[in-house]
Image (cartoon, rainbow, N blue to C red):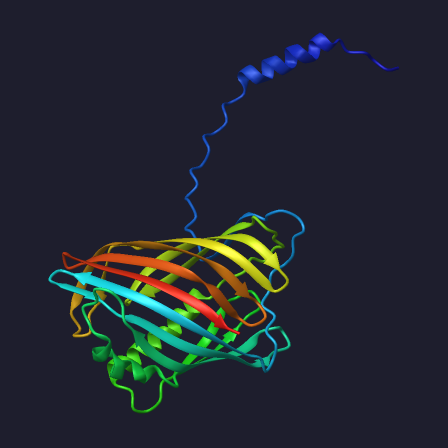
Length: 294
């Protein structure tokens, strides 16, 4: 026979157990996870969305011009350089089965233009800048924009100081290529790209926020803002001495259109970087404009 137990009985038992039970232990503090390099998608944007990927065509050759202005200051020294202009050809030598491409960039022209209030003249830099002519950077570009294996061929008769500078150009190319998210995005999408890099040999972290402003076939228009930070540290100077480095910071902004088929960009970018080395503040600033030559 089914026995019906009064509901009040359950209420009494439940309340009694609640009063006699031990209080729950306090939550275990969680150690915050250290941020990692990579992409964080903030907003996937509006429909229609698509997965953005580089789609270079084997054998394609595209020429672009990069014009850059640079300023440098440290205690007792200020440099304002003329405009450096590099004309470069981007050649897709091969496309691998996984979609990665073997990219070759060759500097086919290097000149200097007058700029107002410079501390060095065009004539002072004209001969030095010729060392850039013929320099080649070979790299592997993955469909998501990561670049690896950059090798710089600077020729045989390059001064060591220039060769070191050209080698840093190859490393900077790996650091600056536009990364693409692993989820479909549309216009209005926002994502952050975090990467640990070395600026003038000093390790630092950059976080670049990218906003997609338009998508037209293989062309993606964007706006970016970048913030650079770094921990206080000691680094080795060329003479082997230790340099105390602190106050690392900087930032930048840019906008333009990236052609995912030709692997080139039309756009502008500004950046600045500052650091205190052995008590002396060093500042750098640059303005770059990249223009595709049809």
